Amino acid sequence: MVGHPAQLPPTGLHMRPGMSVCIDGISLSTLLIILPILVTPPQLSDSRIKMYTASDAFFEALWELGVTYCFVNLGSDHPSIIEAITKAQDEKKGQSPRIITCPNEMVALSMADGYARLTGKPQCVIVHVDVGTQGLGAAVHNASCGRAPVLIFAGLSPYTCDGELRGSRTEYIHWIQDIPDQKQIVGQYCRYTGEIKRGVNVKQLVGRALQFATSAPQGPVYLVGSREAMEEEIPEYKLKPEHWGPVGPAALPESAIKMIAEALVEAKEPLLITGYSGRNHAAPGELVRLAETVKGLRVLDTGGSDMSYPANHRASVGLRYGVDDSIRTADVILVVDCDVPWIPTQCKPKESTRIIHLDGDPLKLQMPVFYYPAEARYKADCFTAIKQLHEYINANQSLSQKLSTYSERWDKLHEIHNKRMSTIRELAVPGQDGHYNASYLTAAIRNAVPEDTIFAIEAVTSTGFVAD
Image (cartoon, rainbow, N blue to C red; front, side, top):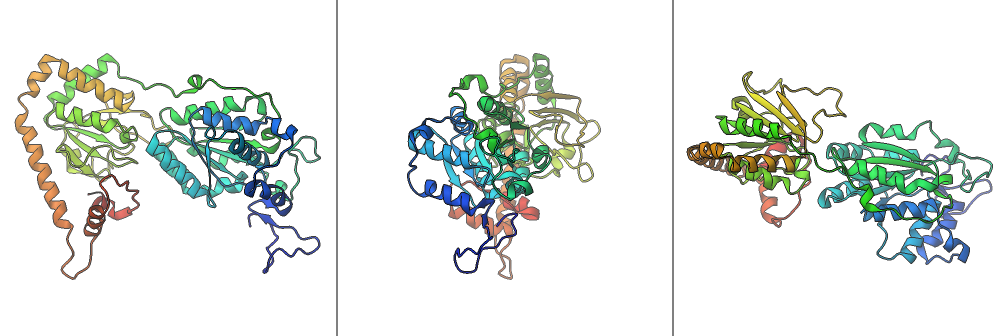
């Protein structure tokens, strides 16, 4: 029961005069209309089958632009959405996003978030007006900070009351759920918000939203549309997907490549700090190549949302949240795709340390307060920039010759890494009193599951032990 004073009778649907029932914003009368559509093949008239609405175009646009799943929690704002879903299932088998019904909105967005991160492809969530948007909860924060490309669509209460347009208000709840600006509920977590005001350009709005979702810095986007807009009959049309791709990756300018490469090679204790570069699954491999080129370069993973550097590599300092001795001793720090490289009140570099920042979002546009001392900042794609750096160093004879003398510190990294691994193993034993600590429990789970298991971790103060 959502936003409605009526309560279901204790035994079945024995209706009393004047009583109405609302299930997640859908009245019983509406439910009786749509229920046969959901449980039996649609029996539509020829005119209805031939009708092409904004909702049909919406789902076509999603499919044309690479969205393969819609995680949905539907309500009274979605009759034409439901019609479009059933029509697509009947007519466009294998040519329309698969629909996954989710009774809880936060679950829906969490599923879309996870699948988008795994595949690198945007996914869609459909929820019910303002209350469904609120039900997304902390999943919006997670998708935003995790930079997951997800398109969220929510209906709006109809904006006509007297039947002026198809989709006009027919339910008590349509007045109660009408708010001044529904987009504001999640707008500050989104890369883009917009309203579908007419059906004729619905595909272009979907395309624009997905461009924001998939371009750096990636993240959730939010579209709304009223019943009138989504039920509007429009001419059928197609998009050219190649016109709606993300903005291409940015590279470093030549002067920056030279400056950063020389700084890393000439440093005595170079350190690279990353946080979410691993959202591009090819990026960790490039970071390894850079570390193996600049022998002695250490890599600290601050674990923003993805595994960005393999913990079993000798250059790995491990996962730490802004506090580590490597930060205090480094003489050159390269910050790459990182929101919190260190916590100044707990740990910070020396005054003499050179700091350079490479990021898809170096200004952190959604953070009111963000400042770290850096002599240079570049808005660049991590994979592209790191590849530029190690290729430049390997092609530069003087830099390569200098690196050839660094075999001793490369061996030292191996020694330090082995010692660290040994310390971690020593922690993963039961206590003398027989109690299990976080290290032992996590190690037992890790040993019991396949090597390619994906871990989604919520460990709070135990995160460091769990990650180790």
